[in-house]
Image (cartoon, rainbow, N blue to C red; front, top):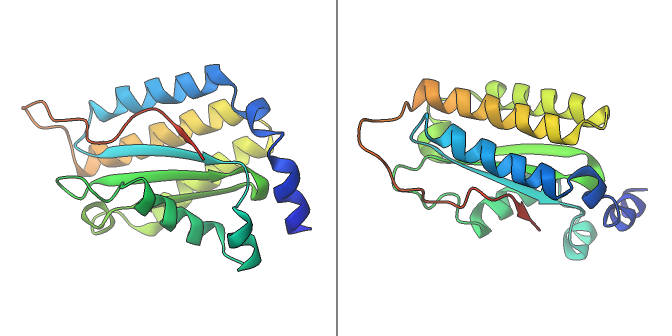
Length: 162
């Protein structure tokens, strides 16, 4: 059954996340990053690559790979956060760099993922993604508020479609 979900997922992602939704996600990340020192990256993947399916890799495993591939870890203050969405499995994972993971309990990230899953289950993909991004931005603003000096945007704010 897992294989079937992954093979049919390729046709669904544009319905769930049309260009307008991706643009709204981009704007939400840009606006949110003005409130904190963190860097947020949103990655959307329709289905796992075949090699990962064959190896029975989990969405979490893939999210950690994507975190590394997109160099979310490569920020000056170790403050990158990846929101990873795997449509085929309706999986959402948040991976935080070590600077953030030291201050934010995994349960906080899990609560964000759960709320996004609830919205996605209702086919409210755009709103679920925006709610998740807002929650991540709020967590980052609480633990890493923006400083007085402008910072460099180290990661692209545009959602990444894998």
